Amino acid sequence: NAGVMQNPRHLVRRRGQEARLRCSPVKGHSHVYWYRQLPEEGLKFMVYLQKENIIDESGMPKERFSAEFPKEGPSILRIQQVVRGDSAAYFCASSPKDSFANTGELFFGEGSRLTVL
Amino acid sequence: GNSVTQMEGPVTLSEEAFLTINCTYTATGYPSLFWYVQYPGEGLQLLLKATKADDKGSNKGFEATYRKETTSFHLEKGSVQVSDSAVYFCALSSASKIIFGSGTRLSIRP
Image (cartoon, rainbow over all chains, first blue to last red; front, side, top):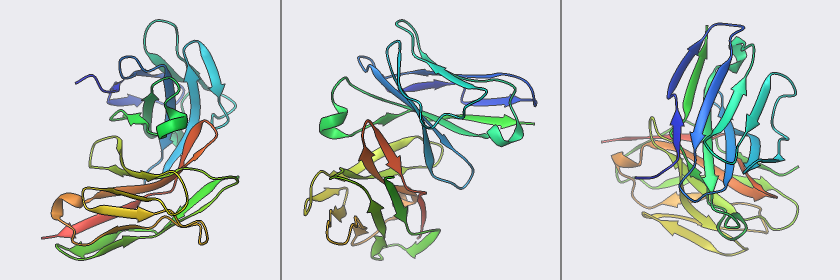
């Protein structure tokens, strides 16, 4: 099963530490999306990336958050100096090149649950 | 901006009951509309979709019709099962991304 793989599934950090969340898209998919799900809330769009490019980062907080999708390797969502409000589930999704306009379907990973103590 | 509003949960039904989860949207242009489902501990998966007005999406006994005049995309199922217990998200396509509603938690009693 070569679905979207996210790790770690669970991550605990203390305030001020850094969190790195990794996402390997479905094999052959070149588009990656990150969403954040706060407790008892819906999914909020954060960022959309293609290989080596950030296409839309309108949902990313201006500070402490960054994302990349290098030519080789997984996509990384990085949160510096975490605060308690960063505690959430972070979901990665992928889609094949050019398919979104036709199908709109995203393939989601199981999420990474960040807890900030 | 584009947005989705869906009925708040949780919704609790008995097995074999009729299900409706309301969803309305605000959008410029003509977005595609979706229902995604999230089972406990898992990521979201596409349940059904409709790409233009009056289209009906259907899957696993669930249906939803794209109503442009009422800007709605309500999810229905005639007879729910315990295995349908999950969180359901209404969503629309907006430029290069999908915008989700806040989700409705559905619990089915045996």
